[in-house]
Image 1 (cartoon, one colour):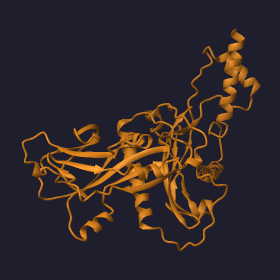
Image 2: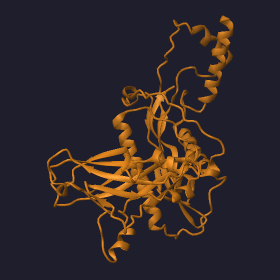
Image 3: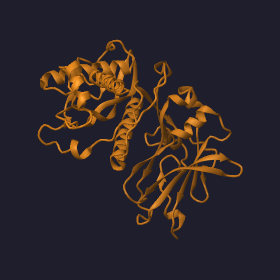
Image 4: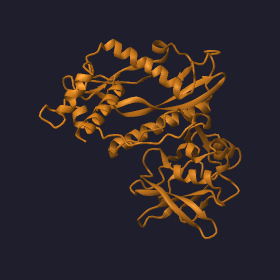
Length: 390
């Protein structure tokens, strides 16, 4: 039984060697490392978009529509906010799906024939779920849905009063029942800001099963004695407008909208289960002293490094890579010394010490043309943010 256990461990170490053979366990030439990283990124991007080669550019003078830029900028902002939230909370990241995700912006068309502004500082937001179902037929394909609305600065509101903006899912309109989803604390008199609510699970429910009432309810609450008229934040798109201002508001870039990120059905041939990653040893990796394992900077210029002209935004990005020494955690006085000795005899050129590999990776949003059609994609796991010894 003992010998059988040893060979099982040896087999596992063999597969570990195969998996990390391209990592930084051995002394390597820095220029070769960078070139390999650049070529790996070339293959990654094409693979995530399910392209066999880079698309041909019909014209370098094509202008990207404002709507596409708006979606791209919203995606960049969402990624930044999520990164800040994860850094603040410090929780373990989940692995994202491999293939690139498309991003679309769906305006929240407020019905002006209804009184959307209700007593007790409430707003009703009709949700056009049929539009989302046209884009995402299966809730499994939906990666994220975010409801965004712009709160304008106003000088007429008491800026000393902190208010809470609460979002609910309407369950039944007749008895006014609803389910709490999320909330944000705001200081109404401060600078203008975007309010973002994660409504992914609710939108998945509406995609999967059409409900009688597909509405959100926005409620402004304040645990104080203030006059409600002095605490209502001015949210763009909900205040009544007259005449041509209605049409102007509908085209405003500050109008409430839903930003959805999803995997196109043709790319999702088989399901990808998410798995938990190991936690990053931040104290060790961030010390950046000597030759320890750490993130090394690497900027990729799409035109200069890859020879690509079909990606319009960004012009390049900080891809980064992992490099450095890892401590040898198995001393010769441990119970594994016999196993390691046998493995070293069978694989004399292999390294059995831990290797410096990526731990946390962020997505990369891009604007590119496929033919004459401009698209926005969010490519997962493209930016190395931290490393670990594994």
